[in-house]
Amino acid sequence: MGLPLLPIFSITLITFLFYHLYPRLRYKLPPGPCPLPVVGNLYQVKPVKFRCFAEWAQVYGPIFSFWMGSTLNVVVSSSALAKEVLKEKDQQLADRHRSRVAARFSKDGQDLIWADYGPHYVKVRKVCTLELFTPKKLEALRPIREEEVTTMVESLYKDCTNPENSGKSLSVRKYLGAAALNNITRLTFGKRFMNWEGVLDDQGLEFQAIAAERLKLASSLATAMHIPWLWWMFPLEEEAFAKHGERQDRLARVIMEEHSATRHKSGGTAQQHFVDALLTLREKYDLSEVTIIGLLWDMIAAGRDTMAVSVEWAMAEVIKNPRVQQKVQEELDRVVGYERVMTESDFSNLPYLECVTKEAMRLHPPTPLMLPHKAKSNVKIDGYDIPKGSNVHVNVWAVARDPEVWKNPNEFRPERFLEEDVDMKGHDFRLLPFGAGRRVCPGAQLGIYLVTSMLGHLLHHFWWTPPEGVKAEEIDMLENPGTATYMRTPIQAIANPRLPAHLYNRVVVDLFISSYLCQKLRFKLPPGPCRLPIMGNLFDIKPVRFQCFAEWAQVYGPIISVWTGSNLNVVVSSPELAREVLKENDQHLANRHRSRSVTKFTSDGQDLAWADYGAQYVKVKKL
Ligand code: HEM
Image (cartoon, rainbow, N blue to C red; front, top):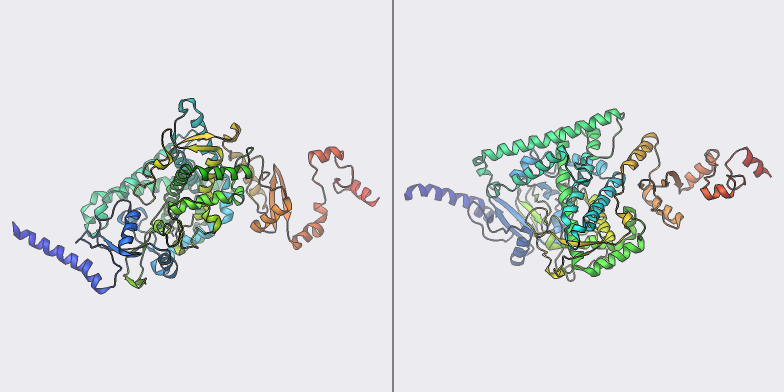
C-alpha cells in the first residue's frame, strides 16, 4: 500500500521545491503567506479578493506576493507603489495574464483587453484612441445615451407610480442593468436588443444566453484554471469553450453583415456605432475579423457591468446619506430647474454631482483590483525582484482608502473633492478607478458621462428613501466576489417622483437621428454641441450668449454650429473668420434672420435694420 505513494510524494516534493523554493532562493521576492505544494495559496485567498489582499497588506506591507498554483502574484496597495507599477515600470508590466478562460474567450489575446503589450496591442489601442473614443465621436453618440437614461427614468416612474407598488421598494439594479446594457449594445453593435417594454428580441435572447454561458464557463474549474499542467484533465470544458466561441462569433457576424448591407445601401457612409466604425477602418488598420469581433465583445464585457455597478454603489451611498442627496438635488434644482430634464451639457454647472460620482468611485471602484498586469521581463518594484511572467495587481480599493493619503477615508464625503480637485482618469495615483498608464481604461470618459448622467437623472427625478422599517445604517455595504464588484445585497429603495409628470417621458432619438444624419450627410457642417430633438440646443445656451459661445469655441473651435429649434446658427470667433464672414462672403451673408416678433413689428423687414439685402435695402440705405 505504501509503495505507490512514494513516487507521488516525491513528484509533489520536487514540484514544490522547483516552483516555490527555487524562486525564493534565487530572487528577493516580496514577503507573503506561506504557499502549499502545487496549489500555492489558492485556498487561502478569500472570495472577495481585494478585501483579503487589504488584510494581507496589513500583515506583510504595501507590497506582498502569493502563489496561485504555479504563478507568482504580486499585490501593491499604496499610492507610491501604484505609481511605480503604472508609470515608472509601466512598459515592463503592460502584458496581460490570460487565465485559461480569458485565453479561450480572447482567442489567445487577439482582442484588446487580453492582448499582450506589443505591435498588435498598440495598433488596436490606436483604433480606440484615434477613432472610437474621440471627444467628437462621444459627442455624436450622446443622443443615444440621453435616450437610454431617460428611458430608465420613464420605466422607474411607471413602476413607482403604479398603485400596486404603493409604498413598496424597488430594486434599483434592474433599471441600471437595463440602461447599461442598452447603452452598451447600441454604442457597440448599433442595436437595442429589447423593445421599449423591455422584451428581448431573438438576437437579444441569443445575446443573453451567450452572456449567461460566458459567466458559467468563467466560474468553472477554479482550481485547475491556475495549474496549466492539469488542463488536459478537462477535455469537455475545452469543447464547451470552443462551442461558446463559435456562438459568439456567429451573432457578431450576423450583426456585422446587417451593418455592411445598410452601409452599402447608404452609399458607404459610416455611422458612429463602433461596429460601423470598425468595419470602415478595417483596411486602414489591417484589422482581422477575429480582432473586430474580439473588440466588440470586449466593449460589452468591459462597459456593461462597470457602469451599472458604479451607479448602484453611488445610489446606496446617497440613500445612506440624506444630507448628500438633498445637496445634489438643491444643485440640480438651481441649475436645471423643474421645467426640463438634465442633459450632459449641464455637467459643467453641476460640480457637486461630479464630486458625488468621484466619491462613490473612490470608495467603491467597480474593478477594485483593475485587471492583472503581467511582467514582460524581470523587474524590480520597491527593491523586490518581480520575475518575468509574474502577475502584478494594484489594489485600487485599498489605495483609495489609505489613511496615509485620505482624511477619514471610510467616510462618504463628496466635499473632499471641492476642497481638492483630484483627477480620476489616471493622472493622480491616489484615485485609480480606471487604472493608469498604457493600459488605462479607454472607455473612461464614456463611463464617467454615463455614470454621472444616470446618477444625476435618478436624483433630479426622484427623492429616495430606504424601504419601510430599514434604517440607513442597516444597508448592507459589502460586496459580492467577482472582477466587477456588485453589492452583496442589491440596494432596495422607495422612489418618490419630484418633477412634473411630463418630464418622465423618454427623450426620443429617432427623429433626431434621422434629421441629424440627413443634415450631416448632405452638408459638412461646422462642429458644435449635440442637439436634442425639436429643441436643438435651445436649453444648452446660457443666458449671456456671447460668453456661452466663447466657452463652446474653446471646445469646438473658432467656427461652431448651434441649433435653435430647427434653425442652424453658425458662430465664428476669430479675426480670420470674422473677415471671411464680413468681407469675403459679405454679400452671401447679408440677409437678416427675423424672429416671429421682429417680423410682426417690422412688417416683415420693411425697415432698414431687419430688411434682407436686396434692392429695397440698398435704396433705403442710400437714403
Ligand atoms: C465606470 C465605468 C468603467 C470603469 C470603472 C472601468 C475600469 C477599467 C479598468 C480598471 C480597466 C483596467 C485597466 C488596467 O488594466 O490597468 C479597464 C480596462 C478597459 N476598459 Fe474600462 N471601465 C469602465 C467603463 C468602460 C467602458 C464603457 C468601456 C467601453 C465601452 C471600457 C472598455 C475597457 C477596455 C477595452 C479595457 C481594456 C484596456 C486595455 O487592456 O488596454 N471600459 N477599465
